[in-house]
Image 1: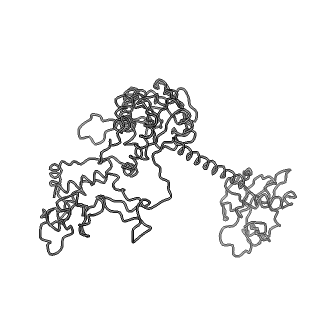
Image 2: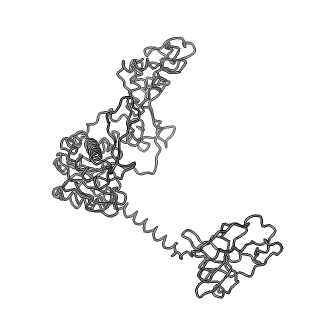
Length: 605
């Protein structure tokens, strides 16, 4: 039973769904409880196996507690036999078509280097909980390094992409001989910089249509551009893309080169910090530090090992064992487009079975054939939970009623696949005519869509009027200190009002007018009293709408705010209003103004 439990834990770990120690102890307790195995009292009290037993169990079954490496769901499920097989089929096609020598089989990829290093281990006092190490900054700047290597073990000079708008020659001080430098706003690869790198690669490889070169790369959006494909095809470069989310296992640079490169770069950066105490690393030192790491890590041994371990050269499509595809078994489901219709559901796919395939015809319906692998001796026996009658009988794998760990905690399995309209991205030979035509079609559709958006924006948008700067001096009073616009209006409505009102040119001191103020996002209108009239502008003192309960007045009520004065052009005067009425009475009421008109009549909603 321990052997079967250990086997189940190994299967979970191989599928990247391993259990932590506490969950393993809980599973062991439930496993023993389901099979009526006597356990110590402290197991029952804590509902899990004891720590002493767990430690001995690990030693007996050659198990160990490890910290797993975070792996995205996309990488875990995308590396499967189907996608890997498609890549090797395309690789075989281009190899048979052109018979590339090893020095013309290239792999290219980008990696990022920062101005902040990852601290290495240091020697310090035993038992000290917190140990520090000086770094250049909290968060450094990213510089992209693009490398290309071939199956013969050679590498072309790298290209640097600096996070600057304008490139300076001083960025490349100490760079590897023949290296190229450029810059983008973010420091990342884009379509233009990728085209520059292709020109750089063509210069160093001397590839031509008569002497072609195979370039293996990932599915970065910048790589799959019409401009890049046209450059590659005209210069004899055959572009072969890897399946999405598989570069960690199938790209030579990622497998054997960039790991040592990052380690050597971190050491070089740490050495620079120790040799220059009190100074920080900037992008001006990146090229020299990369040169040290490049010479130490990008070696023929590492490069050829990467091509060999990925099966690219020498060609070996069976390089990956079956266990390498175990994590993808979680999402290994029938494709509804390829499955025949069933009698009960002619339109839908058949129900998904577990990993071991459909149950044999001679198995009973209630049997769980998932136990066939876990215990072959019980593959055709009845498996189920304990019944009340035999609850006091200890069950073992060779007896009926036994409950396996896989029944208690089944292997993870995705639900049945659903059809979506999303196009599946897969490995492809980009320079082949069908793929190039598809890229060209997608490019034209994007350009057409972009042109349509620009045309719509030109038709809908008009040049915005320059906003009138109105200085507002806020004083504390019983009225609202916040400017309250009558309503928000569009620039089009404002211009129509100005053209339809002949009174905005016949103004005199003491008149009340509606003034339009245009901002970047909207236009608002305020009421102002004319204080002075000049040739093209007026000096207006603005009013504030009274906030609060104004039910005692039928019309919107305003009050003049002192020191709220601004010069406005006459073109911003929308309407001239009739003279308002004053309620009279108390001193506060004498300051109020009530307009004897409906403000909605002047297109103020």
